[in-house]
Amino acid sequence: MAAKGSRKNPYTWSEYTTKVSANIWPGGWVQSGGELTYRSHSLEIYTGMCAKSYPVPETIFNEMTGRQIWSGGWVLINQNETKYYDCNGTDRGGTLGEAGDPCPLRLYGEMVANEIWEGGWIQESNGTLRYVPGFNIIMNLGEGSGFGSVYGFGSVCGSGSVCVTEGLEGLGCSISAGSYLLGTIVNGTIRIGRLHVAWTEGMTIGLNELSAVTFSITPVKTTDVFNVTGLYAVWVRAYELSIGGSFTYTGNDAPTKLFHINTSFIIPEQYRNYD
Image 1: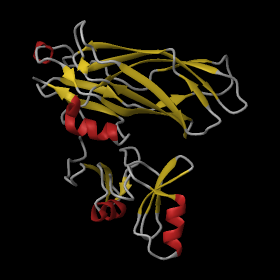
Image 2: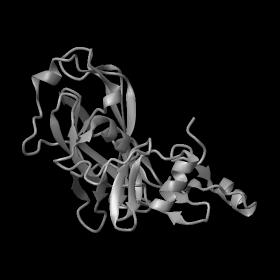
Image 3: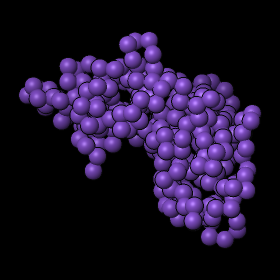
Image 4: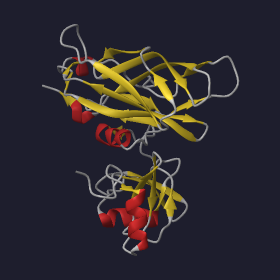
């Protein structure tokens, strides 16, 4: 069980108000109405997720590390510099994910797990470079025909990268079972849903014993409905899953809208078997 007050084990709103009233609030993540916020010991509120686009202030980072609830993320240092600190509190610099400073698979997996991957270069165990765009899906739900496309996240080949290598495909390419919160679905600046992906133990290349993949979308509001029966997944190369198809979204008192997805996902290091 993750430490109380961490992102994986946040306080409820009731627990938060009770501790504040008793003057024993230590600081921590609080979940209310489907949204997470960090509320410091001094009641300073941080509404981000420690992503590079909205880094956490250094004072709150220091509080999190002191409470041992830091899980990795981007930190604003002295109001003018942003650096990535991994889950152990190690300074990984401000260029992590750039072409000259590709992100190791371990840190890529850490960012994906923390829902803060916003795009960048990663480096496979054999040295292969891939560019992986960000994961968030921005949906335009304004007036229109009710038909749209979503191409907001995934894996593509970038200049100078090698996307198919004999080095990877000769390693066995099997994976253990796992799951991730793959992306956040956003209407403007408001989160309306979260896309989850799960897979079974199996192979990621070949024709036999392939890992089976399932999807689900969890709405933030119970009045919203997502239908993902039109989505599909195909293993396109070692450890890389291509995701395509469509899903529908129906909001409260709103017409159903259809959206298409054309994207992919790279299995993080901890689920790979190289034997």
